[in-house]
Image 1: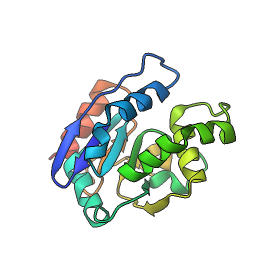
Image 2 (image 1 turned 180 degrees about the vertical axis):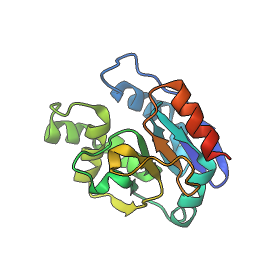
Image 3 (image 1 turned 30 degrees about the vertical axis):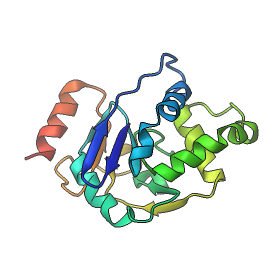
Length: 174
């Protein structure tokens, strides 16, 4: 999880003791409240090479007056959504999720296989404003060729092994 506020970042690693669910982690984020000091909350998969400074460029035009806002990424048009690889949501969207999580549990049930999908479907039911940005993420799962050389992308997903992760990082920073 990453908090972003006009040029400042706080990096927090949150690991749930329950491998099947990050809901305890989101509860900890809510209780600690650090997210309230930042405009954006970013969740990044360990298999994703991420460049915060590039993301700031994408967020700059959307930060002023942000309320309940969710970025859509390359999987918007995919038949298989890429839940959890790289998610960018406003502080207001996360706050609205916290206020409505019990309503979402009642409406959606727990039949949803993972936290990422549950969170996104909950936000969808809450009618969040969205903005599609094709340059947020590069991923094979989005039907594109993964290109770590693309300087416009904020993140690259699909590196379960350390060597691939480092190779992508190296290419992206050359």
